[in-house]
Structures are given as C-alpha cells and as structure tokens.
Length: 281
Length: 246
Image (cartoon, rainbow over all chains, first blue to last red; front, side):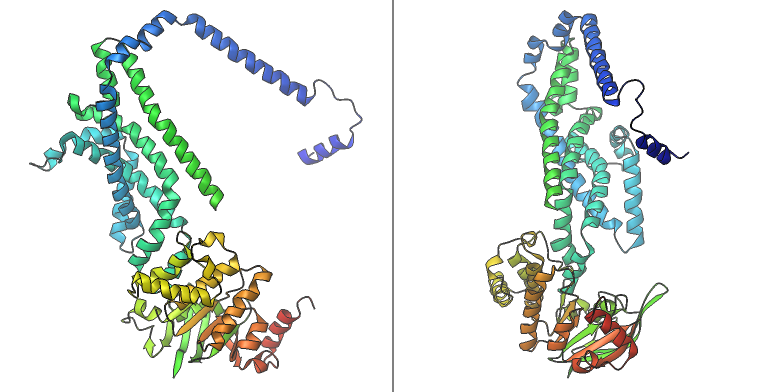
C-alpha cells in the first residue's frame, strides 16, 4: 500500500483508540530530555573547570591593562588600515574582473575566470607566504609601502576574487531591460554600464560586500606572516606577542574581543541592509 | 518623405525564423499600429527597427539613414528613435527628473539646467509634473509608463516606438497612458505602436498592420483592417480579440 492510501485509511478510522503516547506528549518529553542534557553538560563543565586558573589566565585584568592603549592606538588602527586598503584594492580589481568576465573579448573572460578560480581555491595564508617571495620573480621589485603595501596587495588579491563573483551576480541581477532602455536612449555601451547598470549592481551587492568586509577584517590577521615591526603590528599578532611577554593568554582573549567589537556590529548592519533590500523589491 | 522604410527584413533566433521578409513604410506624421497574435513577430519587428535586435538580413532605413549598415553610428541613429517598453524600464535608482535628464546630459550634452527644463516640459505633457522628485518604485504602473514616454520625448525623437505599452498595466490604468499617446498622435508625432488595444488602433491609427507567423498579412486603414478584414486569418484573430469567449 502506498503511504498516501495508508494515511487515508488511518484518517478514515478515527474511532480506533490510539496506542501509546500522543505525538504532542512525545514532543514534550523529548524537549524535557534536551533541557536536562544541557544542564548536565553545563554542570559537568563547571565542576571540571579550574575557576581560579581561568580568571588568572584568561581574565587577568593586570595583564590586559598593560596592553592599553596600544591595543587601540596601534593594533586596532593597523588592523583597520590593512583591512580598508585591502578592501579598496579588492573592490576595484573585483569590479574589473567582473566586467572582464562579461567581455566580448574571449581572452579577458578566460583571464578573469582563471584568476577567480586560482585565488578562491588557494588558502589566503599561502598567498601571504608567497608575497614575501615576489622580489625573487621580479628582481629589484619592492611592493611600495613595505608591509602596508604587501598587506593591501595580499588582502586585495584574495578579496578581489570573491568580490568579482559578487559583482558578477549583481550585474546579472540588473534586468536586461535596463541596458535596452539605456541603449535605446542613444547611450553607448560603456556609458550605459557606468551610468545605469553599475550603480544598480552596486546597490544590489552592498549587503554581501559588507559581509566581505567582515571576512577581510578577520583575514587581516594573516599579516602576521609578513613579518611586521612593533609599529606595524595588528590585533592578532599584538595579542600573541603580549601573551608571550607576560606568559598569560589574556591578551589573546582581549584581541579576540576587539575583533568582535567590529565584526558583530558590521555583520548586524549587513543583515539589516539585506532585509531592507529584500523588503524594497 | 518616409520616416521608416523596412525592406525584406528577416530575423531568426537559431533555427526559429521569427520574421520572414517584412516590407513596409511609415510616413512622417503617421501613426501605424501593429496587431497580431502573440508569437507573430510584431515585438521583434519593433525591436529590429532600433536594432535592439540585429536583423538577420534586410534593411531598416530611418530618416534616410540605413541602420542596418554596419558602418553606421548606431548610438547617434538611435537618438532619433524614442522607445517605450512593455515593462517601462525606468531607471529605479534615479528620480523621475533624473530619469528624464540623464540621457539628455550624457548623450545630447545638454546643460543640467536645460535638460531639467525640457524634462519638466515633457513631464507636464504626460501630466506628472508633480512627481519630479519621486522614485519609479513610488509610482503606479501607468505613471511609470508616462514617465517612460516623457523620457523618450525629451530626446526629441522623430519617431516613437511603442512595444505593447499598456500590456503590463492594470486595466484601470490603461486609459491614462492611451490618452497621452492619443495626444501625442494629435500633435503630429510619427508613431509605430505594437498593441492589443483595438479601440486605440481604430481611433488613432492611420494604418493598421496585421502580422501573423512572421509575415504581414494585411496592411491598410483601420476601417478596412479592423472593420472589414480581407483575410481569413485577420478575421479569425479579430473575432477572438473583439469578442472573447464567443
């Protein structure tokens, strides 16, 4: 018998008394078990933890206060600089790649596709490890701006690939009629792209691009692998250095919290923008 | 002098031949309505006139300029052709005023002030001067379509193309758009209109062209094509459109 006819058969004989528990009762019991399990786990963890050591190692205010104000004036500032410069680079290159991907010149499309595949496929860490070796390929070449330039380059190269895909989706989301309307008014293709299509595409991709900013903010920690001086240090390395200086992990936790200070509100903004756009359409 | 001359126009999408040799002309100041069942190629024909679709073969000549000539400056030629789409295609990120001024400034190189003045004139003409600062999303479909007409008129076209301008509208909004088009016709604008509005075609058109299966079946004054069709296919189509459900 098929499940449908089985159901129909069951429905047609409601008078028959049900055996065992009703579904609603089962659900209530299952929920109760889940609460109990959660409480048990929390109690066990609390009993096993060494609260004195936790306060000493992770919430050590003495150690934390030694990082101030450098945490903000140097580490956070540098993190923001690395992120913003990388983001700007990624934005420009990403938009360019997205336009190349739609080009009528086939090699541009290939180049763009190859770039996107490679840089999305590689761990960002590998790219940062390679950036230091660039002068080997181009003797005498130095990335301008030292670590700042290298960081912007690394973060830009990585984010460009992701942003290109986002821009491509945004450009494709603009209805075809927009280009037709612009062309029918006598606008050349480039002019129509610049005045009509790209502004609409950018509006569409603002929420995902805000998410990209969050990702890049976190990825800026990879600058650690470029070898930075005390003045160039960013949040992750700052926390790590402080924690080895004082032999105490609190600074790492403080760095983590500082990241969250930025990433959580930004993520919230991105979701709000997304919701507003969804409602506006 | 004829404004539009179409000679032996063919258009295929892959293996599907949509236009199978179209010949017709639109004289200056004439209003020509193209009617026919969906899939008859009438919208494709209209889109071939301003080369939004590249014809497979044949010639399109507008004001003596052959648009199908590969060496022609298509952007310059298109400025003489106003196009109104079924889906309006206003620019949603720009205000009504900006929708009407942007091509004037970027294409015709008019100053900002002059473009705004011309935009206001044309928005007045379509009865929407009070909406200059609104965004398209805040307007009804009928209002959007009238803005789209103003946007096309602001470029001073010598010919206006309408691609089923009322098909996407709620029935109660159709009248406003048609009355703007009627006024335009009275002012002497040359118009080529693909439409399902038989009343409009009968009253306003100088000529009605009936298309079916990628060819022109019948071409003549409305009192002939609509009131006294000569071909069986035209009669069939009209009886379905004019007396649906019978």
